[in-house]
Image 1 (cartoon, rainbow, N blue to C red):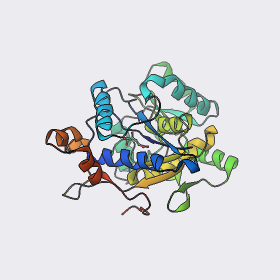
Image 2 (image 1 turned 120 degrees about the horizontal axis):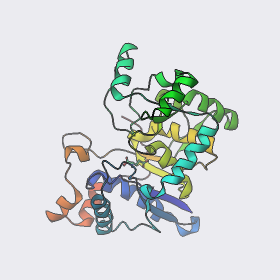
Image 3 (image 1 turned 90 degrees about the horizontal axis):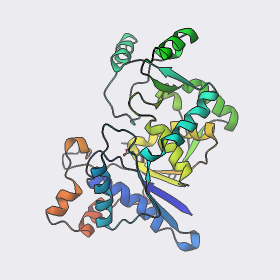
Amino acid sequence: MLTTRFAPSPTGYLHLGHAAAALFAWRHAKETPSGQGGGRFLLRLEDIDPMRCTQAYADAICEDLTWLGLAWDGAIRTQSAHLPDYRAALDRLAARDLLYPCFCTRADIAREAARSAAAPHESPPNSAAAAPYPGTCRHLCASERAARLAAGHNHALRLDTARATAEATAIAGPLTYHERTEGRLACHPARFGDIVLARKDAPASYHLCVTHDDAFQGVTLVTRALDLKPATAIHRLLQTLLGWPEPHYAHHPILRGPDGKRLAKRDHATTLRDLRAAGATPAALLARAAIDLQAPFKPA
Ligand code: GLU
């Protein structure tokens, strides 16, 4: 059965961009004819960041989706309730020597990147656009690493992406993924450098949790905004290393405001509840949020 999901982080109220993402996933599931097995639409709350996520926002997400009429199937998966699952996946990668502790602060990384003339830029933790980590802690000798761990230095866990890619390629050949309107595309995980799989301030990262949960929940079509399309390379790498099934992908355009800028929680984009309070109906909002399911979408 075709299974899609909507996977917001409860760090703010939903806006029209979220409605578009949820509707895109919901329609892919619900418009799959029963003759083709039908579809399921799941809801997952990606709340592993304890500093930014709140129960009030999680409750509001459920309320807004219900008001829109985008009912989800089955139980909601709440990531913070499943931390041992992510730990177990990290342990499997660590046992193959594919992870290393990284003690660098943001300032260390910025300094190192500036030295190698690759200017770092601010970007969200799950963004594909972050400047790759310069690999400083990958070069620590075993005794230095052990001493810092023994001294309790705060650290993240990074994937040794080059080694991981070599291992995955040995398992499955060159990595590719299936984009719904484009067919098979090549994956280039190296451009991300050594990505963080467990953060200093959160026990797991977006890339690890999203890949784990899509496999665990039986998601067969991952739908999400085009800005995350490059991250698919990392997700295919993790799926291959961990023996998880490969979903198909359908990345959709990002809804923009009248100023042409992406609607974003941090810019206080008009929330669904504000629009509702101002008298908007679910039908009117869904009409504004509708994205043509069949159109081919490529990054601008
Ligand atoms: N929690 C992610 C976000 O809100 C979901 C990304 C995805 O669907 O993979 O951006």
